[in-house]
Length: 262
Image 1: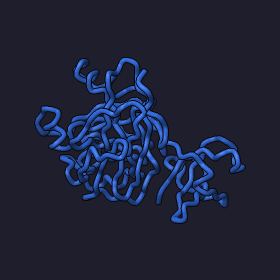
Image 2: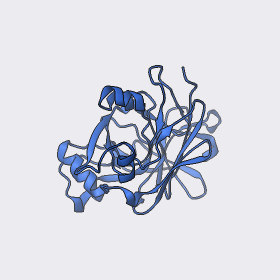
Image 3: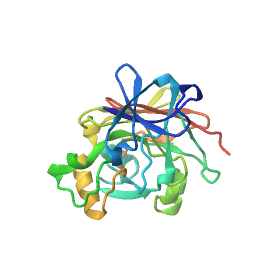
Image 4: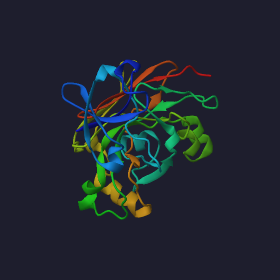
């Protein structure tokens, strides 16, 4: 099931406030009531064509985005590091979230900004110290993420908060797939149509069960929290005014434009 969050276009007749829906196989959207992560999926009789809406980030975390660093061996190597013995975690503010089609805004203090394609986990319930064998009980679904990063600021600061914390530095979307099972699916990034990253989810050092077990042993996870699971090798800069697309087989494609450099 593909859960979308959207704004109806003016001629749709449903106002302008964001709504949630289910994207059906015929590309129609069945409107649902409330926030499905908190209130469950309750369909209404209202339907819209996909052409009558603007898709938004499918989740806006009320609490946090937890990110995993160096979770692909080839990426750890290209960053000049070794494979970590346990997951490396850091936090991105929820204000970094942008939606599909939104513009990634280039901050004035960043000399360049990089793309990082990632699988994103959306948490569906309050949980703490989740056993590996029960992680599926706490997952609402999966979506795509671009962990946008200012590499120079990352090196300058010696830690990652500023480099990864600017507004629009975490595009998510285009929907949440509730039936996705991570395996050997291909993950790619293209910049202006040219492939820059090309790997498989099976290349992750720490898989989803290990990640959720580890993170939930550190902090309580809340409904709507997002965990982004690391990026493969091939990271690099996004030129100004470029088009960047992150794809994972079975999850679709997340496309964003980059603003002009200020």
